[in-house]
Image 1 (cartoon, rainbow, N blue to C red):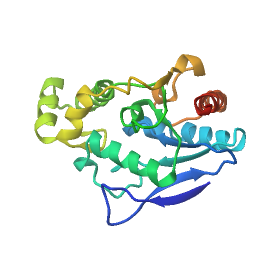
Image 2 (cartoon, rainbow, N blue to C red):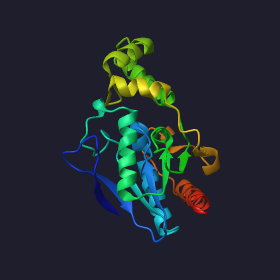
Image 3 (tube, helix red, strand yellow):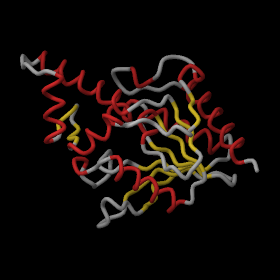
Length: 227
């Protein structure tokens, strides 16, 4: 496991970095992480899946940050789905990946030219609903009066702070109508077993889910790589 630099087109002054796992096989997998808080809750599972597909299934993989998220130096407020998709395409080209795996909302920005598997994919509207619900609950607990309609109107005009993420108006409006790629293969949580870890209040892990998910991903890569 290494951190390797790659050129993020949204922040050309300095390279971005990605977590990379070497594998002895011919395929290399790009992982687009889940979005916002779900990405934090699924981080451990994501890394454990990559560790398993490298060690047990000889598939190399690379896990970049989306621009403006985690260790990225780009500004989140300036992003939209096109910039995120362009960054993932640049990362895919730099590392010569052959397949892409999108976790949850990451399926909204998987590069269109690569075979794609989406784990428990979700629409952009569903991502926003969850974040708006958390914002409204926090406001209620703090004694503030906010409504979803007013927040949505503000977000479309000026952007909005949601759960500590400053989401600009372009990204908000993009997410409202975004759907995962229709040509991708879906891997629902029901095939992995147990409740999705993104439902937990805090980040967690499940070796059983990591094993099952890694096996399913490896089988999909092997099938789609056959001539």
